[in-house]
Image 1 (tube, rainbow, N blue to C red):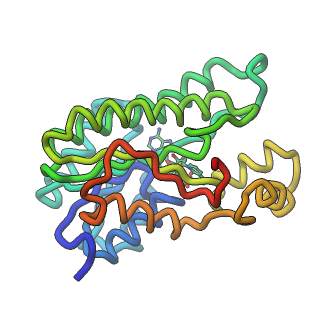
Image 2 (image 1 turned 90 degrees about the vertical axis):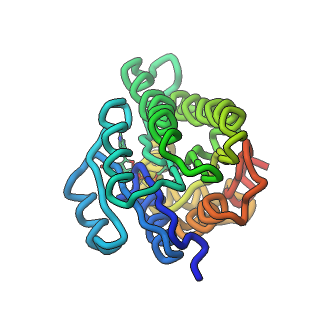
Image 3 (image 1 turned 180 degrees about the vertical axis):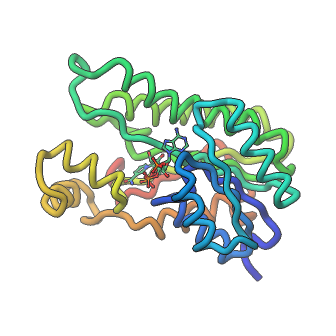
Length: 252
Ligand code: NAP
């Protein structure tokens, strides 16, 4: 028996990195998944990997409300139910002090993370099974500051506020809403942030970040997926409005 037998999950940014690792683990645990992202080719590759009997996909930019609505409906129609929403799509924004930070990048970063998660909630909640689970991938910097990443830090904190409001709104339906807070996790996304933040090549930049983490290393995408599985499954039936940290002690 899998921990997500019969469950259906919609995962934004599910075709790469943390989202794809979650899709892999969720399908291994019996779920079917509908991936939502912006690059059709990457989505098709991910669906092929996961198996088209277990996975499907829609192209949608999460900042586009109608596109998110249509993507959720497509997933619901394909698999006939919706039990888990994983709002995970993200961008890093710029690496620059606030005084030099480009305003358009600031606005876009907030739009993808905060407005994007709002769209997923707004159009996913009406379809979500009572007792279902919503997970928003925030970040360790949703709980602490980090210099030269003001938009990303503000966006990741903003997701916590959205999660807390949503958790109170849907508790009567036994729907749980939580944020997941990964620390530095080995993906090309994080490699780019670390190289920009340190000005060093990837391996050396990663060492600098390892030095900040009490447990001394990056988290793997599989470890994040295990945390998401816990929040998605009935094992966390009494967990809502929580900030679930998996960061090797970085924010402690
Ligand atoms: P990733 O592999 O780049 O995944 C992000 C995904 O979101 C990509 O598939 C990307 O598509 C998609 N995406 C970006 N903008 C989008 C939009 N407007 N609409 C729909 N999809 C969009 O990076 P990741 O590391 O797995 O990150 C996943 C989440 O974890 C993000 O929210 C990130 O902030 C968070 N996080 C990551 C780390 C880390 O260390 N890796 C730590 C803390 C939090 P394209 O690739 O086609 O652009």
